[in-house]
Image 1 (cartoon, rainbow, N blue to C red):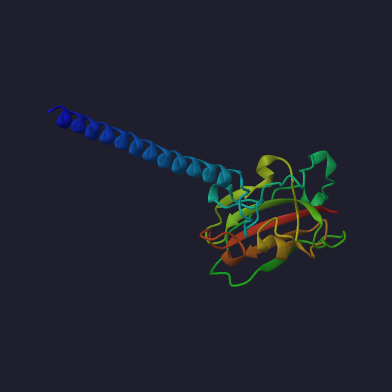
Image 2 (tube, rainbow, N blue to C red; image 1 turned 45 degrees about the horizontal axis):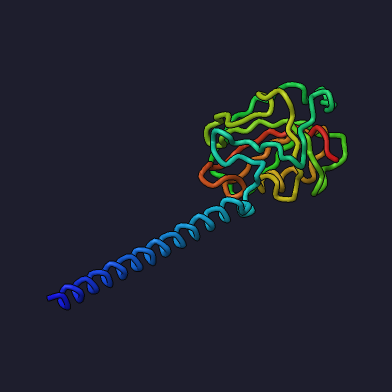
Length: 199
C-alpha cells in the first residue's frame, strides 16, 4: 500500500512539475512574441514615411487643396514681397468647360522680370478652383500672405512644377491642370498664379 501511495505521489509530483515547466515555456513564448511585436511597432513608428510621389507642399484633400509652405522654403511676410500694381487685387477665377487632357498656361498679366528657373524658390499668390464648377478650393489671398516653395523638384504637384518654370516674375498666369498632374480624385483644377519673386 505504501509503495502504491509513494508511486502515486511521485506520479502526481512528476505531473505537477511537468505542468509547471509547460506553463513556464508557454509564458516565455508569449513574452517573446509580444516583445518582438512591440519592437517591430517601435521600428515602424520611428521609420520616416516613404517619399510621396505627390508634393508634400500640395493639397491631398479638397479642404486642404493648395500647396503649403515647406520648412525648406520659409514663407516671406508681405513686407518682403514687392507686389506689382497689376497683381495687387485678388483675381476672380471662374471654372472651365469640358475635360483637360494637358496642362494649359494662359498669360493674364505679362511679367517683366526674369523667368523662373527649375530649382528656384518662388514666392507667389494663387487662387485654386475646381475646373468643372469654379468652386474655390484654396487661396493664399484668404490667408493674407503669399506662399513660397521650390519649383521643379517635386515639392509641389506636377502641374505647378511644369507650369511655373519659365513664367516671368511679375506675371499673372492661369494654369489649367489635368487631374493626372494634380491630385487623384480631385478632378481637373484651375489655378491663377501671381509670380512675385524667384531666387
